[in-house]
Every structure is written in structure tokens, then in C-alpha cells.
Length: 260
Image (tube, rainbow, N blue to C red; front, side, top):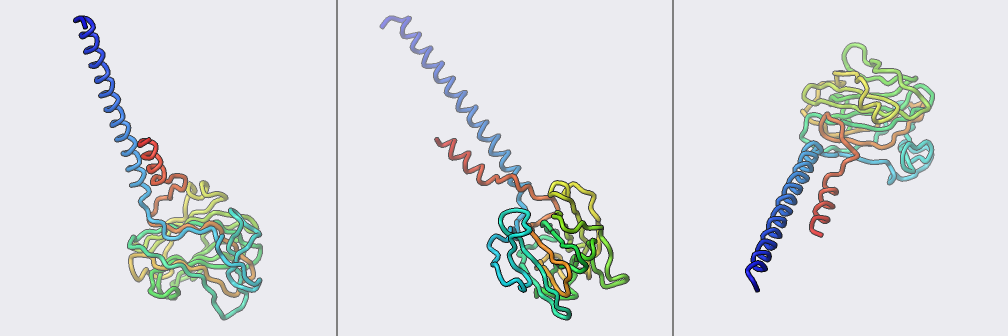
């Protein structure tokens, strides 16, 4: 082999090494950039979901049951939760236990109230038992085309806002169990509700017993207007949860593709 051929071979080998090195560095930069972006998304979405249901697994019961699955009206999926109990002097409740140490939680859901007077109520509290009249927390109900909240001092029922009947509306409630106040958002879509001007710093029914929520309740008694709920979502923190992003799944997909 002559000298010129040896030089060309060495030169070619060096070029291959340089290209390979550059590709490796580029890949490392790409991996680091994407991994960092996912880390940022994970950090923003580190809020724990405490309860999420579209009531698809809710049992269909008898028509007189207080809480039962409904196939009409439904906002999303195939079912919603129908709430109705007209008996006076007795209370019915559907409770969800919340496992969190955070002082602020958010509750979101679709609401449909039939035309009438009294409908259902919701309560979020920090008591040991599901229902404690002195536990503190947001106590909200729907009556005669308005949504209102209850306090034990002064005027017991105070109007939050007008509330359209016979149509689906989206509600978001952000509760601060350190300050014993909550913010109330509503709109004709999730986006509208989240970007609406909220009713801020509404007082709890009583001051919270502890600086964290322990129960979420649907309450019904002496109702004249049937109510429906769809897509219940409860999570930690006061920032809206981005439901469109699933960083863990995307990150796993990315690493799988990278290995290939």
C-alpha cells in the first residue's frame, strides 16, 4: 500500500471518529434537553390527584335512590351522578375520604340543576367523621337559580352568583384550610371557568379544625330540584391541573424510542 493511500485511510478514519463524536454529543444534548423539559413538567404537575371519576362505575339503582347513575343528562362519557332526596328532616350523603397534608385543595365538576327550588349541597371539611356540622370548610348549595354558601354567623346563607338551570355548567372551588376561605369559579366550560373572575375569599361555614381537608361530601335533603354531576376532580394545590399532559407516559415512550 503506497503512502497516499495510507494517509487517505487515516484521514477517513479521523473524519468518521469526529462525526461519531459530534453525533454522540448532539444526542447527549438532545437527551438532556428533553429530560429537563420533562422534569419541569413533572414539577409543575406534582399536584396529587385525590379523587377523579366520571361516575362510569356508579351503580344504577332504583329511581328513589338518593345517589345513582344517570344516562340522561350526561355531560361526558355514558353516565353522570343523579342526586335527589325529597324527604324532610333526614339527610343523605355520599362521601369521599381525602388523603392529603396540603392546606389548599381544588375541586372541579360539571353541574346540571333542574328547574325548581332546593337542590343538593357540597361540603369539604377537615373533621374525623364525614359529617360534622362544626367542622368548617366550604358549604355550598344550589337553590332557585342561584348558588350560595352557608356561614353560622350573621346571615346564614349568602349568594355567590346566579346559576343557570337546565344546562351544564362547570364549577371550580379552591379551599384554603389555613385561612378558612375559598374561591368559587364557574363557567359554561372548564376553560371559561378556570379563566373567569372568581368570587374570592369566601368564609368557611366555620373555621377549619385542622389545616387540611379530609372529606368531600355530596349532601341531599328536602330537594325539589334534581341535580346531576359529571367529571368530579379533586387535587392538591390552587393552580389548575393540566389534564392534557401526561409526562410520565411521554417520558417512558421517549426512552423506549431512544433505545431503539
